[in-house]
Image (cartoon, one colour):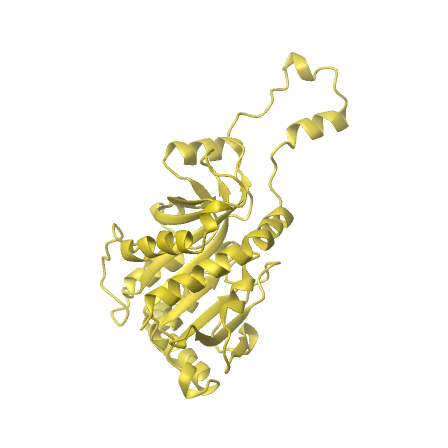
Length: 317
């Protein structure tokens, strides 16, 4: 972020929040919780069960970055959840760094949430499973991360510090709120989801994308301690913690990363194969965006129920 962008970041977020509030009834103007919906997880917006409910297209919101990714609906949804009618905001779709957005733009919505009064943010994503104990369809409650772009200079807090949001050097050893993670596991058992799907804890590796990782990169990330890998979430979490927002994050395992080395061209077993057979042999385990979306559809109801139960427990009378 350059000096001018940094100096204007709080002003831009404030202007955007004021515009959003002008479109909302009083009861929705100060959401306590924000939920960021990852690929295929836009159904989380269905957790809003009461009226009023307001949906604003990103394209109508000043300063808001646009997303071009299939599976992201690009709308900001406001409503009430639970018997206490807790005001919430859902970001159905996110801006990604790999789309060409700056880190400032990719995390702008998180800063808007802070200005709107959000105290807790629940971040969801679709991710590749590096831990071989994780199966497609499992859910991982994140307890740490590897910010690979951030470690080499592409960091969402790079540049002049924005004092209105937080301190110059925010710690991240406590980034993933322990009380919220405890509530997540309790809610999982309360709903009986442990009988049909697994909830793990693990470390998320953030890579810039948009290519899926090579076999060697997957082995490297696993060696470094990552359990899942994806192209989002961590910048949002860094900015949220900088602003003092509590964080709970979930990854839906939508494909299993290929860790074994690829076939060699001098392997005796492939010498008799034709080109079509070789392509099939090499493509084993290859990830596609379509399977990511499909896994999201299958697990959306469980993720939706989990998030709703966590909020009910968090804001119960």
